[in-house]
Image 1 (tube, rainbow over the protein chains, first blue to last red):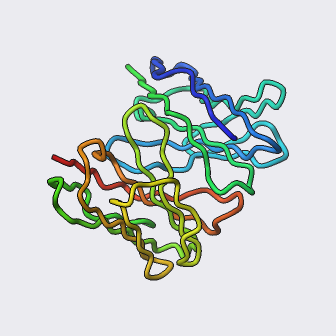
Image 2 (cartoon, chains in turn yellow, blue):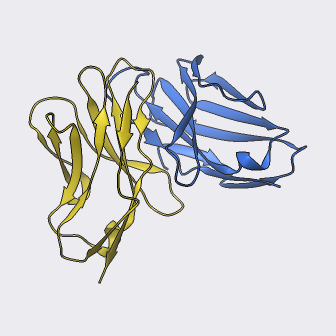
Length: 113
Length: 114
C-alpha cells in the first residue's frame, strides 16, 4: 500500500526567509509525486509534480520540490516566503496504475511579517 | 468561470434530511471524484467515476449515494447522515482516471449534520 507522511502539522516562517515543507512517501514501484495547496475556504490547487527526469521540479508561485529517491522524500521549498503563501499544503503520491492518489495529512504554513 | 464548480458551498442538515451536493466540471475531463476532508486527517477518496461509470467505491456507507449522469456532472446524494459525517466534501476531475495528470478541485461543500 502506498502512503505519504508529512511530519509537521505546522511550519512557521518569517517573510523573506526560505521555507521547507517536508514530505516522505512509501510506494511499490516508481512514484509520481504531487504538491497541492489549499487556501482558506477553497479547494485544493495543484502546485507541481514529479513524474520522471530532473529531480528538481519547479511549480507555481515560485515553489519547487526536490525528489530524493534514496531518502524517499519530496520536500517543498521556496527561496523567499511571502505572507500570501500562508495556507495548507498537501503532498500526494501515486504510481500511475493505482486507482487513487494518496494524500498526506497536510502541513499548515504560516508566514509572518 | 472556474473549472470545477460545487454547489451548495455550505449545507446544514438534520440526520433525517435528504439533500444532494452537485459538482460540474467545464474542463472536458473524463474522470470525476468525491473526496471527504476532515480536520487533521488525510483526504479520503470516496468515489471515482470514469466516463460516467463508477470505478471505485472506498467502503463508503450507503447513506452516501453518488450519481454521474454525464461526464460533466457529479452528484452526492445524502440521506440519514450522522454528525461525524460533518466535513468538507470536495469534488475533483482529471483528464483520465489512471495516469499522471493532476486533479482539479472545486471549492468544496461544507456540510454540517446536526
